Image 1 (cartoon, rainbow, N blue to C red):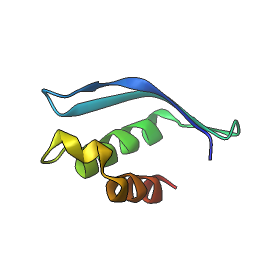
Image 2 (tube, rainbow, N blue to C red):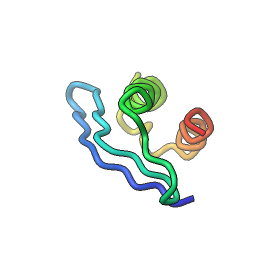
Image 3 (cartoon, rainbow, N blue to C red):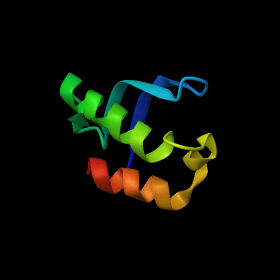
Amino acid sequence: LELKVKGNLSILNKKINFKDIKMNDYYEASKEDLKYFNDTFEKIFLNKNILNIFDVKRIQKFITEIS
């Protein structure tokens, strides 16, 4: 899986803004997809503790959700 992501993360506001997501050079996220990815990422990683970003189980859950 080759995942290319552009965006920014606001740790203080617990928000993420994906600007571009490409996967394996054949998929490029639409604006609707980016909104979904933003919401899903915030729900899984930023709901309680910013250190959740480094939790392997949460990373796997996020990839499963967006696949």
